[in-house]
Amino acid sequence: MSKAQVTFKDVSEAFDLIKSGSTIVTAMAAAEPQLFWSNLHQKAQKFSNVRIFCANPSRPWPAIADDSMGDHFEFVIMFMTCAIRKLQGRGFVHYMPQHLSRWSQNLKDRTGGIDVFWGSCSVPDKRGFVSLGTSNCYESEVLRAAKYVVLEVNPNMPSTFGGTEVALDEVDIFIESNSPLPEVPPALFGDIEEKIASYVVDLVPDGATLQLGIGAIPNAVGKLLKNKKDLGVHTEMINDAFMDLYLSGVITGRQKSIWPRKIVGAFAYGSRALYDFVSENPVVEIHPASVVNDPYRIGRNHKMISLNSAVEVDLTGQICSESVGHKELSGVGGAADTHIGAQRSPGGRGIIAISSTMKDGTRSKIVSTLQPGAKVSISRNDVDTIVTEYGVAQLKGKTVPERIREMIGVAHPQFRDLLLKEARELLYI
Image (tube, rainbow, N blue to C red; front, side, top):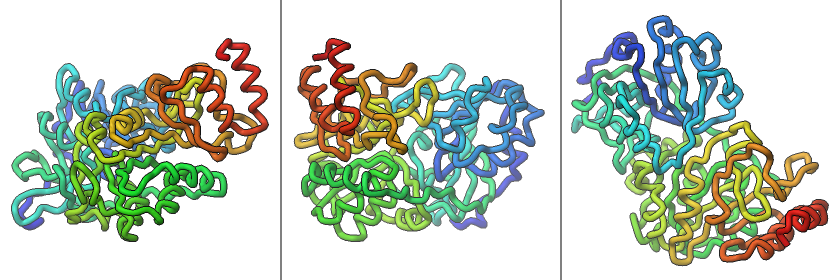
């Protein structure tokens, strides 16, 4: 079926599906529906008490940035971004703590249900299907639970495999769009990140299955992994590092135990080149996060290695990856899902990689006590391995005194004496 065989409606007709008191869920990251967000503030006077759930906003959209919108909307953000985190605390922008593997179920379980799912999709194919493209974290599952479905048909959206397919008769309104997809430029890394990456890469055996987060350290790891062989991918986010490793022949998936030879993720977020790479590529499958981030399923992978980062780590192994004190920076996302799941895998490992200090070097990221209000993203009961530029701390299976010594050993030398003193005062050792 061609694009011409779809009947497009005006965006105003789609907004007519929304009533005061409605619950709306929008697609996330590169799949966020841009016509919805760019028009929402102009429709505000029609509504009151509308709740909108979204994740990874690419920009401070007018409806979220305008203080007057609190009379009309509540925005529930499931993962903060730098574009949106500063807009918290005004009474109508709230973070929703939850593991990524539970996002779709938690949304579906809400009292009153989901009134409208609004997302993005590819141009329809000749068989009468569209693809949700770059994101399937919760989109396909929530779409089928919503009373009404609105999709913005965007020729810039890649058509992907793995459960992103939606039949035309499942959609109530199609809107024509031609918006460039949001992109995430690769984070730059320096000598410290490359040193951390060198320790991480030593922990990755040939044939391992990888989950990499986003940021400077994962990018540095991606660069140094090019000497490995037959790596596989089972990750929440498919990024440019995976594309580069596949194109260089490092990623083959030959030794993967589930979805062999496939790059499996819940969403793709990165450059335009990445979106072109995943488009109609049978090697790439984008499945719901309820599947991809299920710790038991993660644990079925061969030599599963999960790499995430953190804001700070205490001496006993509590991981804060999402806040500075009380201030929410991002969200837990799938950090706990993948860190715990990787340890279920034979030969697997959950790795938290951080620089030993803040950027200015005046404060240690390894602390005796987390900042007041800091959110524990991964408990010390579930922690495995911590890596800094000073080496590797193995915490799993260790007593508190043993952990203290491991953590002090990878802290910056200028803070080690103080950390030891504080540990003794706290009766840890």
